[in-house]
Image (cartoon, rainbow, N blue to C red; front, side, top):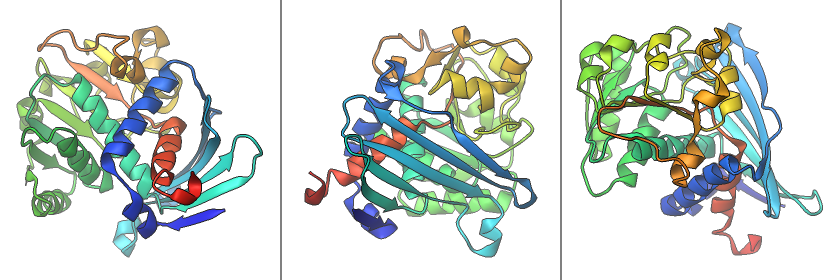
Length: 319
Protein backbone atom coordinates (compact mmCIF):
# COMPACT_ATOMS: atom_id res chain seq x y z
CA UNK A 1 0.00 0.00 0.00
CA UNK A 2 1.23 3.46 -0.92
CA UNK A 3 1.51 5.93 1.96
CA UNK A 4 1.94 9.63 1.31
CA UNK A 5 2.27 12.45 3.81
CA UNK A 6 1.12 16.02 3.31
CA UNK A 7 4.41 17.25 1.86
CA UNK A 8 4.55 14.42 -0.68
CA UNK A 9 0.93 15.02 -1.68
CA UNK A 10 1.60 18.72 -2.21
CA UNK A 11 4.61 17.89 -4.39
CA UNK A 12 2.43 15.67 -6.61
CA UNK A 13 -0.50 18.08 -6.80
CA UNK A 14 -1.40 19.68 -10.14
CA UNK A 15 -4.14 22.32 -10.10
CA UNK A 16 -5.48 21.85 -13.63
CA UNK A 17 -5.64 18.06 -13.24
CA UNK A 18 -7.49 18.48 -9.96
CA UNK A 19 -9.98 20.98 -11.43
CA UNK A 20 -10.81 18.64 -14.30
CA UNK A 21 -11.26 15.73 -11.89
CA UNK A 22 -13.50 17.65 -9.48
CA UNK A 23 -15.62 19.03 -12.33
CA UNK A 24 -16.10 15.51 -13.71
CA UNK A 25 -17.02 14.27 -10.23
CA UNK A 26 -19.80 16.86 -9.88
CA UNK A 27 -21.18 15.81 -13.26
CA UNK A 28 -20.98 12.10 -12.39
CA UNK A 29 -22.86 12.74 -9.15
CA UNK A 30 -25.61 14.68 -10.93
CA UNK A 31 -25.96 11.86 -13.46
CA UNK A 32 -26.42 9.27 -10.73
CA UNK A 33 -23.11 7.50 -11.34
CA UNK A 34 -21.79 7.89 -7.79
CA UNK A 35 -22.51 5.49 -4.95
CA UNK A 36 -22.58 7.61 -1.80
CA UNK A 37 -23.65 6.31 1.63
CA UNK A 38 -24.93 8.84 4.17
CA UNK A 39 -22.31 11.07 5.78
CA UNK A 40 -21.28 10.14 9.32
CA UNK A 41 -21.15 13.20 11.57
CA UNK A 42 -19.71 13.54 15.06
CA UNK A 43 -20.04 16.79 16.98
CA UNK A 44 -17.84 18.04 19.81
CA UNK A 45 -19.54 21.32 20.77
CA UNK A 46 -17.61 21.69 24.01
CA UNK A 47 -14.46 22.32 21.95
CA UNK A 48 -16.12 23.73 18.80
CA UNK A 49 -15.20 20.62 16.85
CA UNK A 50 -16.75 18.24 14.35
CA UNK A 51 -15.82 15.19 12.32
CA UNK A 52 -17.23 14.04 8.98
CA UNK A 53 -16.68 10.61 7.43
CA UNK A 54 -17.53 10.39 3.74
CA UNK A 55 -17.16 7.48 1.35
CA UNK A 56 -18.06 6.81 -2.24
CA UNK A 57 -17.41 5.13 -5.56
CA UNK A 58 -17.82 6.47 -9.09
CA UNK A 59 -19.17 3.85 -11.49
CA UNK A 60 -16.39 2.37 -13.58
CA UNK A 61 -13.54 3.46 -11.29
CA UNK A 62 -11.12 0.84 -10.06
CA UNK A 63 -10.99 2.31 -6.58
CA UNK A 64 -13.23 3.79 -3.91
CA UNK A 65 -12.39 6.27 -1.17
CA UNK A 66 -13.15 6.68 2.52
CA UNK A 67 -12.33 10.15 3.86
CA UNK A 68 -12.12 11.40 7.43
CA UNK A 69 -12.14 15.17 7.89
CA UNK A 70 -12.15 17.07 11.16
CA UNK A 71 -12.68 20.71 11.97
CA UNK A 72 -11.77 21.94 15.44
CA UNK A 73 -12.20 25.68 15.31
CA UNK A 74 -10.49 26.58 18.58
CA UNK A 75 -7.24 25.02 17.38
CA UNK A 76 -5.65 28.20 15.97
CA UNK A 77 -5.54 29.63 19.49
CA UNK A 78 -3.28 26.68 20.36
CA UNK A 79 -1.12 27.11 17.29
CA UNK A 80 -2.78 24.17 15.53
CA UNK A 81 -4.62 24.04 12.18
CA UNK A 82 -8.41 23.96 12.39
CA UNK A 83 -8.73 21.09 9.90
CA UNK A 84 -7.20 17.62 9.72
CA UNK A 85 -7.88 14.25 8.17
CA UNK A 86 -6.89 11.54 5.71
CA UNK A 87 -8.13 9.71 2.61
CA UNK A 88 -8.03 5.91 2.31
CA UNK A 89 -8.12 4.54 -1.25
CA UNK A 90 -9.21 0.90 -1.69
CA UNK A 91 -9.60 -1.42 -4.67
CA UNK A 92 -13.15 -1.66 -6.01
CA UNK A 93 -12.27 -5.15 -7.30
CA UNK A 94 -10.66 -6.80 -4.27
CA UNK A 95 -11.28 -4.41 -1.38
CA UNK A 96 -7.56 -4.24 -0.68
CA UNK A 97 -6.15 -0.93 0.59
CA UNK A 98 -4.22 0.77 -2.20
CA UNK A 99 -3.14 4.08 -0.71
CA UNK A 100 -3.30 6.11 2.49
CA UNK A 101 -3.14 9.83 1.85
CA UNK A 102 -2.24 11.42 5.19
CA UNK A 103 -2.99 14.90 3.95
CA UNK A 104 -3.90 16.43 7.35
CA UNK A 105 -7.04 17.77 5.70
CA UNK A 106 -5.17 19.54 2.89
CA UNK A 107 -6.86 17.64 0.06
CA UNK A 108 -10.26 18.36 1.59
CA UNK A 109 -9.37 22.04 1.85
CA UNK A 110 -8.19 22.16 -1.76
CA UNK A 111 -11.12 20.24 -3.24
CA UNK A 112 -13.46 22.54 -1.29
CA UNK A 113 -11.64 25.56 -2.70
CA UNK A 114 -11.87 24.16 -6.22
CA UNK A 115 -15.55 23.32 -5.77
CA UNK A 116 -16.35 26.84 -4.62
CA UNK A 117 -14.37 28.32 -7.48
CA UNK A 118 -16.16 26.14 -10.04
CA UNK A 119 -19.57 27.13 -8.65
CA UNK A 120 -18.71 30.83 -8.58
CA UNK A 121 -17.24 30.76 -12.08
CA UNK A 122 -20.31 28.98 -13.44
CA UNK A 123 -22.93 31.17 -11.75
CA UNK A 124 -21.52 34.68 -11.29
CA UNK A 125 -22.15 37.38 -13.89
CA UNK A 126 -19.83 37.24 -16.89
CA UNK A 127 -16.57 39.07 -16.34
CA UNK A 128 -17.04 39.49 -12.57
CA UNK A 129 -14.11 41.10 -10.76
CA UNK A 130 -15.30 42.28 -7.31
CA UNK A 131 -15.29 39.35 -4.90
CA UNK A 132 -16.11 39.34 -1.19
CA UNK A 133 -14.91 36.66 1.19
CA UNK A 134 -16.83 36.30 4.46
CA UNK A 135 -14.64 34.41 6.90
CA UNK A 136 -11.01 34.31 7.99
CA UNK A 137 -10.03 30.65 8.11
CA UNK A 138 -8.20 28.39 5.69
CA UNK A 139 -11.10 28.39 3.24
CA UNK A 140 -10.98 32.16 2.95
CA UNK A 141 -7.50 31.74 1.52
CA UNK A 142 -8.22 28.66 -0.59
CA UNK A 143 -11.36 30.11 -2.16
CA UNK A 144 -9.49 33.22 -3.27
CA UNK A 145 -6.46 31.39 -4.59
CA UNK A 146 -8.44 28.71 -6.43
CA UNK A 147 -10.78 31.24 -8.02
CA UNK A 148 -7.95 33.46 -9.22
CA UNK A 149 -6.18 30.43 -10.71
CA UNK A 150 -9.40 29.46 -12.45
CA UNK A 151 -9.70 32.88 -14.15
CA UNK A 152 -6.08 33.82 -14.98
CA UNK A 153 -7.28 36.14 -17.75
CA UNK A 154 -8.36 38.84 -15.28
CA UNK A 155 -7.21 40.19 -11.93
CA UNK A 156 -9.86 39.81 -9.27
CA UNK A 157 -10.27 42.31 -6.43
CA UNK A 158 -10.83 40.51 -3.12
CA UNK A 159 -12.39 42.07 -0.02
CA UNK A 160 -12.24 40.11 3.22
CA UNK A 161 -14.58 40.51 6.18
CA UNK A 162 -14.48 38.58 9.43
CA UNK A 163 -16.01 38.76 12.85
CA UNK A 164 -12.44 39.28 14.04
CA UNK A 165 -11.10 42.31 12.16
CA UNK A 166 -7.48 41.43 12.88
CA UNK A 167 -7.91 37.99 11.35
CA UNK A 168 -9.51 39.55 8.26
CA UNK A 169 -6.51 41.83 7.97
CA UNK A 170 -4.20 38.82 8.23
CA UNK A 171 -6.04 37.04 5.39
CA UNK A 172 -5.73 40.13 3.20
CA UNK A 173 -2.02 40.33 3.97
CA UNK A 174 -1.51 36.65 3.16
CA UNK A 175 -3.35 36.94 -0.15
CA UNK A 176 -1.43 40.08 -1.06
CA UNK A 177 1.83 38.30 -0.30
CA UNK A 178 0.69 35.51 -2.63
CA UNK A 179 0.28 38.04 -5.44
CA UNK A 180 -3.47 38.62 -5.23
CA UNK A 181 -5.24 41.97 -5.01
CA UNK A 182 -6.82 41.95 -1.55
CA UNK A 183 -7.94 44.26 1.24
CA UNK A 184 -9.87 43.78 4.46
CA UNK A 185 -13.10 45.56 5.32
CA UNK A 186 -14.99 46.12 8.56
CA UNK A 187 -18.26 47.15 6.88
CA UNK A 188 -20.06 43.96 5.83
CA UNK A 189 -23.30 45.55 4.52
CA UNK A 190 -21.41 47.94 2.23
CA UNK A 191 -19.04 45.19 1.10
CA UNK A 192 -21.97 42.92 0.21
CA UNK A 193 -23.63 45.67 -1.81
CA UNK A 194 -20.42 46.33 -3.74
CA UNK A 195 -19.56 42.70 -4.50
CA UNK A 196 -20.48 40.90 -7.70
CA UNK A 197 -19.77 37.55 -6.08
CA UNK A 198 -19.51 36.44 -2.46
CA UNK A 199 -18.25 33.31 -0.76
CA UNK A 200 -19.27 32.58 2.84
CA UNK A 201 -16.81 30.30 4.64
CA UNK A 202 -17.74 30.46 8.33
CA UNK A 203 -19.14 27.97 10.87
CA UNK A 204 -21.74 30.57 11.91
CA UNK A 205 -24.91 29.40 13.65
CA UNK A 206 -26.78 32.66 13.06
CA UNK A 207 -26.96 34.32 9.67
CA UNK A 208 -24.30 36.88 8.81
CA UNK A 209 -25.53 38.08 5.40
CA UNK A 210 -28.90 39.81 5.19
CA UNK A 211 -31.31 39.91 2.28
CA UNK A 212 -31.32 43.71 2.10
CA UNK A 213 -27.57 43.81 1.47
CA UNK A 214 -27.68 41.77 -1.74
CA UNK A 215 -28.37 43.55 -5.00
CA UNK A 216 -29.45 42.26 -8.42
CA UNK A 217 -26.91 40.13 -10.23
CA UNK A 218 -25.03 38.99 -7.13
CA UNK A 219 -23.88 35.40 -6.78
CA UNK A 220 -23.22 33.78 -3.39
CA UNK A 221 -21.38 30.52 -2.79
CA UNK A 222 -22.05 29.27 0.75
CA UNK A 223 -19.74 26.54 2.02
CA UNK A 224 -19.79 27.00 5.79
CA UNK A 225 -23.04 25.23 6.67
CA UNK A 226 -22.18 21.53 6.61
CA UNK A 227 -23.99 20.20 9.66
CA UNK A 228 -27.25 20.84 11.55
CA UNK A 229 -27.81 24.33 12.98
CA UNK A 230 -25.17 26.13 10.90
CA UNK A 231 -26.42 29.09 8.84
CA UNK A 232 -24.62 31.94 7.07
CA UNK A 233 -27.41 33.51 4.99
CA UNK A 234 -30.66 35.05 6.15
CA UNK A 235 -33.51 32.69 5.28
CA UNK A 236 -35.37 35.43 3.41
CA UNK A 237 -32.33 35.97 1.19
CA UNK A 238 -32.33 32.32 0.21
CA UNK A 239 -36.11 32.30 -0.22
CA UNK A 240 -36.05 35.21 -2.67
CA UNK A 241 -33.04 34.13 -4.76
CA UNK A 242 -33.75 33.50 -8.44
CA UNK A 243 -31.70 30.31 -8.68
CA UNK A 244 -30.69 27.88 -5.93
CA UNK A 245 -27.91 25.42 -6.73
CA UNK A 246 -26.26 22.76 -4.59
CA UNK A 247 -23.82 19.89 -4.89
CA UNK A 248 -26.22 17.40 -3.27
CA UNK A 249 -29.92 18.24 -2.81
CA UNK A 250 -30.27 15.62 -0.08
CA UNK A 251 -27.37 17.02 1.93
CA UNK A 252 -28.20 20.68 1.31
CA UNK A 253 -31.76 20.28 2.55
CA UNK A 254 -30.74 18.14 5.52
CA UNK A 255 -27.67 19.91 6.91
CA UNK A 256 -26.58 22.59 4.43
CA UNK A 257 -27.45 26.25 4.01
CA UNK A 258 -30.89 25.32 2.66
CA UNK A 259 -31.90 23.32 5.76
CA UNK A 260 -33.66 26.25 7.46
CA UNK A 261 -36.11 26.82 4.62
CA UNK A 262 -36.58 23.09 4.11
CA UNK A 263 -37.42 22.48 7.76
CA UNK A 264 -40.03 25.24 7.63
CA UNK A 265 -41.64 23.68 4.57
CA UNK A 266 -40.67 26.52 2.21
CA UNK A 267 -38.16 24.62 0.09
CA UNK A 268 -38.18 21.17 -1.50
CA UNK A 269 -35.78 19.19 -3.67
CA UNK A 270 -37.74 20.32 -6.73
CA UNK A 271 -36.70 23.92 -6.01
CA UNK A 272 -32.95 23.34 -6.31
CA UNK A 273 -30.60 22.53 -9.19
CA UNK A 274 -27.60 20.24 -8.91
CA UNK A 275 -24.23 21.88 -9.63
CA UNK A 276 -23.21 18.99 -11.87
CA UNK A 277 -26.14 19.78 -14.17
CA UNK A 278 -24.90 23.36 -14.44
CA UNK A 279 -21.33 22.27 -15.20
CA UNK A 280 -22.47 19.75 -17.83
CA UNK A 281 -24.82 22.36 -19.34
CA UNK A 282 -27.81 20.08 -18.79
CA UNK A 283 -29.24 23.12 -16.98
CA UNK A 284 -28.78 26.61 -18.37
CA UNK A 285 -27.91 28.19 -15.01
CA UNK A 286 -27.96 31.98 -14.78
CA UNK A 287 -30.37 33.52 -17.30
CA UNK A 288 -29.35 37.18 -17.07
CA UNK A 289 -27.17 39.68 -15.25
CA UNK A 290 -29.86 40.68 -12.75
CA UNK A 291 -30.58 37.31 -11.17
CA UNK A 292 -29.48 36.56 -7.61
CA UNK A 293 -27.97 33.08 -7.48
CA UNK A 294 -26.89 30.98 -4.50
CA UNK A 295 -24.80 27.80 -4.47
CA UNK A 296 -24.86 25.70 -1.29
CA UNK A 297 -21.92 23.30 -1.15
CA UNK A 298 -21.85 20.69 1.61
CA UNK A 299 -19.10 18.58 0.06
CA UNK A 300 -19.27 15.31 -1.85
CA UNK A 301 -17.44 12.04 -1.45
CA UNK A 302 -17.12 12.23 -5.24
CA UNK A 303 -14.81 15.22 -4.76
CA UNK A 304 -12.65 13.19 -2.40
CA UNK A 305 -12.46 10.37 -4.92
CA UNK A 306 -11.54 12.84 -7.65
CA UNK A 307 -8.84 14.69 -5.73
CA UNK A 308 -7.32 11.42 -4.47
CA UNK A 309 -7.23 9.89 -7.94
CA UNK A 310 -5.82 13.10 -9.43
CA UNK A 311 -2.99 13.01 -6.90
CA UNK A 312 -2.19 9.34 -7.38
CA UNK A 313 -2.16 9.65 -11.18
CA UNK A 314 1.19 11.38 -10.79
CA UNK A 315 2.67 8.20 -9.32
CA UNK A 316 3.90 5.57 -11.78
CA UNK A 317 3.55 2.99 -8.98
CA UNK A 318 -0.22 3.53 -8.99
CA UNK A 319 -0.72 2.99 -12.72
